[in-house]
Length: 189
Image (cartoon, rainbow, N blue to C red):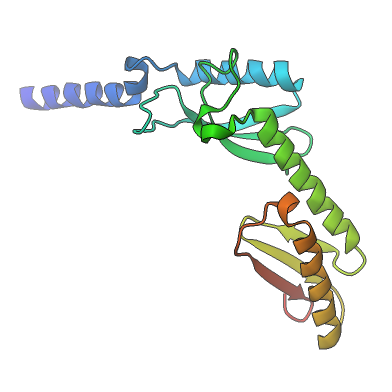
């Protein structure tokens, strides 16, 4: 019985230690990190941006116990979102994202990049609204839905124009080197 109690106490202590290891190493709490990030977004972006999925990111290379991963998004247009690494302990004094190396990026830079990407996607959708009413941009693929009957030659022409339009906005769309194009029709959903 004594052994079970000792093992139980050791497990509880181990659990507490593992969950608070970063705090023991000088890191800030997740609650304080969330408060700092919320204050920063309110101050620098007038509350236009929100965040979710704030998680500690302990990088063995830098040994920084204050690094967190987070998804930042536009509150009114949730399609504008980006993932980044932040140091909420220093964010209010220095908003340069040190994890991004020599680029000296800030949250505002990442937000602007994603906002332009969103606007370009909306322009592509507007260019093809009459022919392709549904265009979904995913991380590794594009999905399009073509309603009604369409002849093979017309489909090839439409796809050629669509791909040419995507290629003309390659940098703004921040397209990876390999993407898939999924074509759905009424006959082949």
